Amino acid sequence: MNWKLTAWVVAVTTYSVCCHATGDAVGITVNDMTPKDRQIETDCGKINQFALAGNKAYRQQNWSSAVDEYTAQAAWSEFCRLPRQSIAMAYNNIALALMGGNEPLKARAWLALAPDNSKSVANLARLQPALAGLHAASVASPGGDYWRYAGFGVWSAVSVRPQGERWEITFNGYYMPAMGIYYGPNMGNFSAVVPIAAGQAVYRQNRQDAGSSCQVDLSFSPDRVHLATVEGDCGFGMNVQARGDFMRVSIH
Image 1: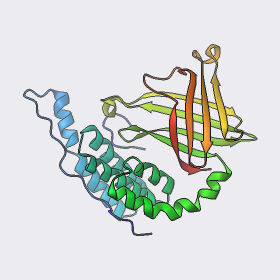
Image 2: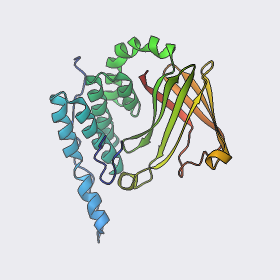
Image 3: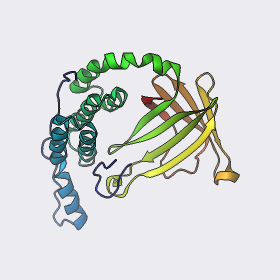
Image 4: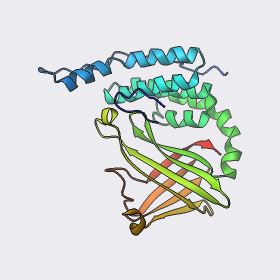
């Protein structure tokens, strides 16, 4: 998925507050601007273009393109340090496009990034019937995808897929450095087929096989999975951690 992050590629109900552009991007003021400073100022000036392109795709019901454009709007709004209100507007734009594309769980994840924003509150309320309709399936199986926000439009993810009586659990974790929008994130991952019993799973990595050892405990509930690294660091990139709550964004 091309999210228009300059130097790298990451892989109908009427809803409130549809499709707004941001205000002007924050300019960079220095006496002697370096080429990188000028590049940043130019890129921060494009935020409104992403919002307008997202609006166009939204009106055409091209939901995936709208999500891509609005994600670029959100990522650059964060990087360029726009006001919270502008960043929350971008999150809501993404959520609205996901609602249009019938992906309410992903929409909920984006709205959760600005839970106190009035637009987020209104749109989350409108999502409740769709979320309630998915509750039984969420309870029945842990299979699906789970996200935790890493910043600049990027989510760390856990995927869970059935493998006979066991489950293939794949973790793809990211940490976004200050200039990560240009140079990409620090990364770490693991994948293993393990049992899930009473909502609990354990991933163990052997130093002899993988060069580093670790243990990650996973605790599943219908709408999230909690990861806790109880031993080692799994050999991930700097600041990448398999820990914290990951919100469910799909059911399989």
